[in-house]
Image 1 (cartoon, rainbow, N blue to C red):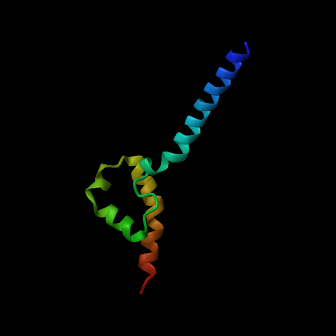
Image 2 (cartoon, one colour):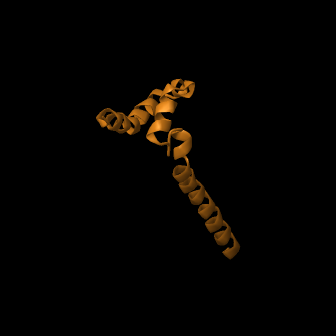
Length: 76
């Protein structure tokens, strides 16, 4: 009985850890522009990769990219 409890707890820890790890580290794959500077985001917007992202990713990209556009417009 004690052995089964220990095994069950170990399996639960691995499953919960895997789920948490997936959500913590999934961001960069879902958002290929994650961590890019404004100039790099501009390059990404002009690249063929930008055409391959889903519509949801496209909307998320512009939420991150639009402030960069506004900064560039305000530079004299």
